[in-house]
Image (cartoon, rainbow, N blue to C red; front, side, top):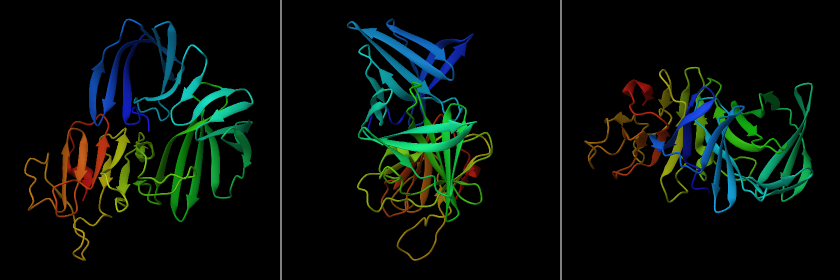
Length: 309
């Protein structure tokens, strides 16, 4: 996994020029130094950094597919014209595409997606559009909405370098009540939500969102589960009510919010929730370690009323 997978970026733009660059990581926003050999520019809805060093020019594209103001590093190219797209496309030319995982191409007719093609290991194949799938064009992105068993999964595909090859940039599930789900769900690339930080990212919208944790999904992991939410704003809520706060006693217990965790101890850790450094920590067993974490990108304080315990 890329070391940039957990990072986001924000920019100050004045009269079409980039005046400041900020890195967002684990809920903390820090000002980044703009080096002398870097040139930052706005290209449509993307931000482009061009850096020259040791005779080579490196171009990096940052994209904000959901328009929440937080950008992700999406594509990178060097002066030898080899194109690198995070976790997906490694090089492309017209009809010959080499991929490390999966990429996609689409036939769009009169603004509608007429055909979907999957590209894997250099092979392009036509995919069936299932009856429960709806494919739409959203600006420069392609969006798939798939409904099954009362759960709607929304997947966004983006084409960062405009070569007609798209990669999956975000995926989120929502329940019939409109809440966004953070739960363990199989995806078409064979990964499972809970095994790749990129697959844990949910973006909030302009509406009042409810982010519902329907499964802690840590039973088969040796490390701490971490989710990441961008665009968390006033009126949004995190719903933990489906999780048993104290496992092993046969009851469905309710969590207790203990502020920033300063009072955390072995006596109150079972069923404790605390927020510190932009991260919401959740514990539902007898030790003082959190079983899973929810990083709220750009959020510095959290009202207890924002959490459904």
